[in-house]
Every structure is written in structure tokens, then in C-alpha cells.
Image (cartoon, rainbow over all chains, first blue to last red; front, side):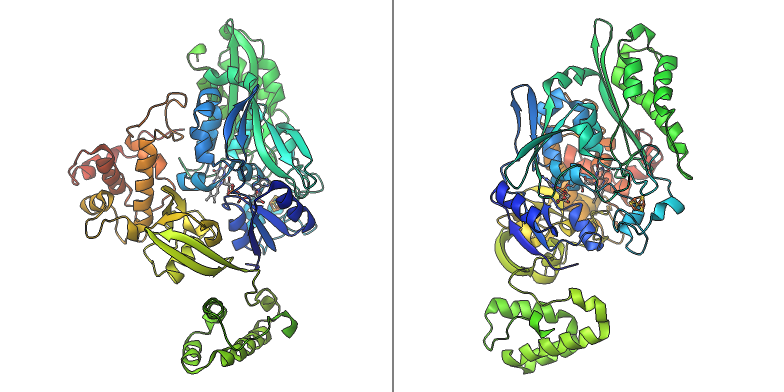
Length: 336
Length: 263
Ligand SMILES: Cc1cc2nc3c(=O)[nH]c(=O)nc-3n(C[C@H](O)[C@H](O)[C@H](O)COP(=O)(O)OP(=O)(O)OC[C@H]3O[C@@H](n4cnc5c(N)ncnc54)[C@H](O)[C@@H]3O)c2cc1C
Ligand code: SF4
Ligand code: FES
Ligand code: FES
């Protein structure tokens, strides 16, 4: 591991300044992703600014949003009364990720910022455009079973593994960030992570030195609390990254779907919002929701999927997982 | 390349001597001999010689091997098993390595060193965490409990007793991590915390009683190469529910294992 200077941040602006001035510096939160990558020689920061002591660990109700602090732990977030009551699907998604120990260490900001990646990214002996721009993509010609079926480019086909982010996408969250010059920005969740295009080294739209301070979820999304579900499908029952995951949430009013929110995980470089499916489900009377109509919504979404050599199964898996997640979200509301 | 080296001084403070030890740590046998015979001034020369040799041998690779300047050294004061400790370490040193190499607490095991197996699980301020993905530097002011600290003197922790009773291990390598993790699990259940298999996220309760499915899900961060899982679950169930069970019963129960798995 490359030697680095370790400092504890006491002030956001100063921490942001350090990281924006020294392009080799990085924020350290729980360390569960960064330290792992440093041990593999994939990340080589010369300086770590530990932000875990900054005052961003609160989860609170503020006006018409629930604001989730960036340095709050994943486990504390999933178990917080405000989250359980208003956004149970977010609790589910967080709890579907990693292990109890890792969730006790991992922070919310770190979870969103964990690298979009694949096993070739970890292996410094393999080409990887994300790790080393211009070196090629090991996975494209290699084994791409876990890779993207949406939005990939010829430069990178990796998927974003964050479970939490899939739920946040469906809950219309907003990411609040603070920069070196104390400039604050709000980024709609759909604009936070990015597709690889020609610059797969960039996972998201943060500027150097910008720090996530909170993730805000509008209370309007709490209307979907009773009819929401996060389904994660993986190679083993627990403690594995998703092959495909689905966040599905509905607001039911007067016997029909007033609002539908659907997002897929592990199918793209970013959490994948399913506009097509949402459109077809919105306004539907519950009476008309059955296997055939749910399936039609799913098929409309998956029509544009572009599987790679080894991951064609993901299209069918996503199809079945989406229908199942819809049914679990709608519970007794639909006749299966 | 000597420009990269801090100025050598004749008199080393205790901390500096410790750092020097760190730098020299892979000289092995010859290092021990040297330290036995040498004054600290000579040690300075040893460092230079050692580095020159290593550079000649390893070429490029050595570029990343620089002696600890003030920038890379961190002093950390924390509590380990209820005793105040203060260590001076390379900023790169994980809590796992500090426990094992600096504090001679070798109960905590290094399995994968990448957060994937749970062998290194310890408690930090009462919550289970992975010491292999924690920098020692992050432990300032914290309180760490390792497997060496869970018993009260000669009285084993109930979880240790239950693991013995139910044969919750074979080789024992994963066991310190399993036990620390299980103790953490108990606290979490007592606080009413959820898991992915909990039936209703919105239903809150002060404390919850866990099914075997819940125990398995909550322990999924601890792998056991020997496959002692059914016995581990039996041990945890016994301590968690307070109901003693017959260790033999699990053998007849194994056919049911996994039958209620989700998804
Ligand atoms: C074995 C294993 C299994 C896992 N399984 C899953 C899984 O199934 N699902 C899942 O979703 N995740 C999984 N993870 C990933 C885990 O969730 C992340 O590692 C964790 O959420 C990262 O949070 P952290 O606080 O530890 O981040 P760190 O490792 O401290 O930081 C990660 C990155 O984020 C940056 N950063 C941190 N905080 C901020 C901030 N506030 N503003 C700007 N930048 C910031 C850091 O500079 C760094 O680049 C797994 C991890 C491991 C090790
Ligand atoms: S898919 Fe992306 S991360 Fe994986 S090897 Fe290719 S460029 Fe690297
Ligand atoms: S050694 Fe820490 S999880 Fe394996
Ligand atoms: S007892 Fe051998 S690894 Fe668990």
C-alpha cells in the first residue's frame, strides 16, 4: 500500500479544500470500500481525510423532506424510526447489502460513492479503462456474467453494486453536496451516478473535493410506504452482490395506482430507473393488475436491454424479479 | 535517493525507536542480532544500508517503500478490552494488525483481510465491526473488545460456553469472529434492529426474538470453512432465547436446514 498522510477533518470547508487541491487525496468515511481498494493497489491516495467525525450523522425530519446524514452508518439509517416508518424499502435495501459488521461501519455517503466496478477492476494485472483509462476493458473480451445490460459503452460494462442507491433512485432522493468554496449543490438522484460513455473512470457527477453532506428524501415518497418492496436476487441467499435487484413502490389511491416508482440494480453503470414500466402502471386500476398486465409493463422496460456474451440470463431474471417485486409490493392488492 | 530520508539522529525517542523497529521489521534474524549489539546511532546506518540493499534488489517496487516520516506515523489512544492503550503506528496499519502485531492479541484472526469472511470481527463501542477494514488511526478515543475481552476473568461469556456445548467449531479459526459477531447480534436483537429477512420493516419492537432464519441471515458475514453452521446457530439460539437445548437434537434437525431460505 502506498504510504499516506492521515488527518481527521474538523471542518467541511477545510476538508473539501484539501481534497480539491491535492488530486491524490481522498475522503475516508467507514473505509470499507476505499481501504479494500488500497490494499489491492487499485486506489493509491497520498492523503486520507477522515470525515467520520464531522457533524453529518443525523437523520431528521426537516420541512417536507427526511434528511439522512452522509456520515450516519448504514445500520443506524436502516433502523431509524423515521426511515422504517416512511421509507421501509430503503431499510430493506440497506439491509440487503454486505454484512451486519460492514453495515455497522459503512456510511451513507460512502455507500453512494463506492466504486462502480467489476472483478477485472480489482485485478491490477488486467486491462481496465476505469482503473487505467485507455488500457482496455478486461471484461468485454472476458467473463461478463455480472455485467451491464443497460447503458454500457465499448469502454466499460461494469455495474454499480449499491443496493441503497436503487431504493434512493425510486424514492426520488436528492443528494446534497458541499464544495471547497463552501458552494452547496443539490443533485437529483437520477443525475448523481453516470453512464460510462468515454470516461468510465468517473462514476458520478461530483467535482473534486465535493463532499456529500446529506441525502434528502421528499415526504411525498412516503405515500408509497405501504406498497413498496426491495427484492435482491443473488448467487447465494445472503452476503453477496446482486445479480439483479428491484426497488418497486406504489401509491394506491381510490383503488388505482396513483404513483409508480421502479428501479433496477446491478444492470447498469448506475441504478436504472424504469420509466417505461412506471408509465404503464400509473393510473391502472388494481382490478386490472394481474400477471399479464404486470408482465407487459416489465417487457416494455426490458425491450431495450442489450445483454453481453455471458449475461443474457439477466434479462429473464430481471423479468421474473420485477413481477415478483411488484406483487410483493402490492401485497393483497392484486390477485396473482 | 538519500534526499528522501529523514535526517539521522543519534538519540532516538521511544516513539522514534518504535518507528525504526517498524521499518526494520522484515530484516528478521539479522535485525534482532543487530539490535542486540548496536547503539541507536548504528541503527541509523543499518536503515540506510537496508534500504539501499532493498532498492538494489527490488528496483521499482522500492519506490513505494519509504521510511516513516512524521506524515505517515499516527499516534492512537484507545481502549482495548477495558485497558487504555496508546500505540504509534504506520497510518497504513489496520486495527487487525495492530491487535495482533502490536498488542499481542492474536485471538482475532486474519482470514481474507478484505472484509469477506468475518474472522477478524471485534466489537467497537459495543457494535460488531471488521478489524481488517478498520485503520488503527480510525480508533482514536474508541473502545475495542476482542475475543480476549469477552470472558469475565475465568468465567466464560455465555456465548463461549454455548459454542463449546454445541460444538460450534471444528478447526476453530473462524470461532473468535463468530463469537464476537454473535454477541453483537444479541445486542442488535435486544435493540429491536432489523435484518433483510425481517417480515415487516415498519413494525417496531423494543426487543425481538429471532428465528433460525433470522440468525442465519444476521450471521451471514461470518464464514466457516469447516461448515459448523448448524451448531453455531444452535449455540446462538440457546443464548438468545435462554432455552437450553440438547446438542444432539441438531443432528436430527439438519434435514430442515435452509428450508425456509428466502428468494
Ligand atoms: C465484502 C463486502 C461486501 C459488500 N456487499 C455489498 C452489497 O451487497 N451491497 C452494497 O450495496 N454494498 C456492498 N458492499 C459495499 C459497502 O456497502 C461499501 O463499501 C460501503 O457502503 C462504503 O461506505 P464507507 O463509509 O465504508 O466508504 P469508504 O470506503 O470510506 O469510502 C468510499 C468512497 O466514498 C468516498 N466518500 C465517502 N464518504 C463521502 C462523502 N460524504 N462525500 C464524498 N465522498 C465520500 C471516499 O473518498 C471513497 O472514495 C460490500 C463491501 C464489502 C467489503
Ligand atoms: S467493465 Fe469497466 S470496470 Fe470492468 S474491466 Fe471493463 S472498464 Fe474495467
Ligand atoms: S479477515 Fe476481515 S473479513 Fe476476513
Ligand atoms: S471452525 Fe474451522 S473455519 Fe469455522
